[in-house]
Length: 358
Image (cartoon, rainbow, N blue to C red; front, side, top):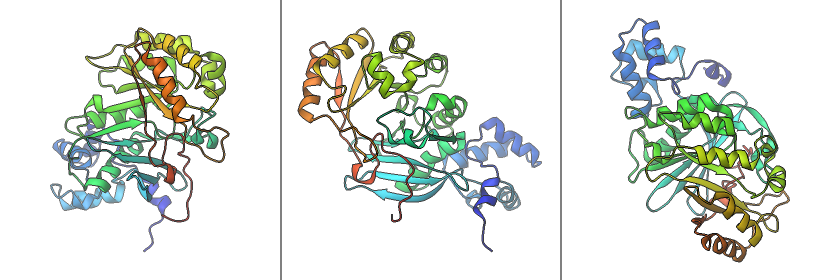
């Protein structure tokens, strides 16, 4: 019998359900409440993605769960591997929608860059994802499901990474425009009975949705905060990141100033370096003035060119000069090494392309 993908997608997914939601599932199936604890452990702690492998559950219950639910919210469609070891994952999330994630291996840590929306509504002028626009918000299950799928592919089901893993919400979409689903996913990732990823290892990057930055500041469980800045003045940022017209730099910096930081926590500013656009010494001086007094660090990111966009990366010599200006004003900055360019996995390149070959 051929299984229709639309039939599968019509079933609710177990991934993304909280402890309380799983208790309701157990109750609806006439099961004792401890079954919810078993399910939670199987889905998140053990990262099991097939009901028949949840062998601590009765066989009849496993069969009923398989008939009424999907175990996974995402399906790996293709994996593309870069010469530098980076992997780009293309996921099916329903009958006709796809999203992307990236796994970045490093000597002392690995990083998974995940998406929060299919596409993106912000239309940042230098980002390929913005070209396709917003298709829809991802569910909590589709967000956390990316992490589970990549961990299982790289390390094996239930196996812990040897030196920990960092999660960055810097893939497709603006996380703060999908606030509730993103926060549910973050809580599931950070839950000690779940994926057990420390809050300090989860970073959310926003283009500057100011009201939700204030909401994020109130959360008991919250990620590290990163701001995609790209320009040190409103005139330039209005062009590069149009949401700046609604939430200008002064309001964004004030939100960052008001943000309550934990011990040794800093706000990260991501600054994409665009040749001849935002990379002059004067831009560096303006940037230093903006962040002066904040507990922060700045990541300088050479732009990752794609044929569809008119921008090119700043020469490394100019990026280094830019960094020297910041250092002269006691601003910490780091030059980020591009990864996965040859498989369109670098920052700003994700666009759910449908390649013919893996």
